[in-house]
Image (tube, rainbow, N blue to C red; front, side):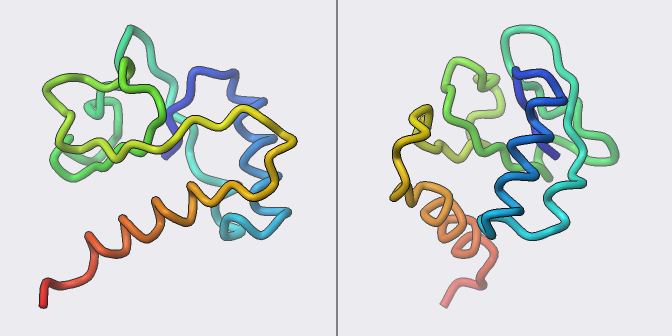
Length: 104
């Protein structure tokens, strides 16, 4: 699921672009966009899951519910289309894969 403060139509365009450039798998274009209201992204909005089952990757600390901070993976903000060597998504992917891997 994608939580975003931008209009769903714009989020879908960005998602499709990530797929087009090979930065996300094809299925990402069809991921549900979560409508949310308020000052924080409450993981309780995620259907069929408890907040303890959800991770939130986000660049805006102010949007994180203080009670759900342990579910947050910070990502650096990106807002410059001229930056073509941004590796932040790769870093976050490595964090998620490390979390998924069994401890050795």
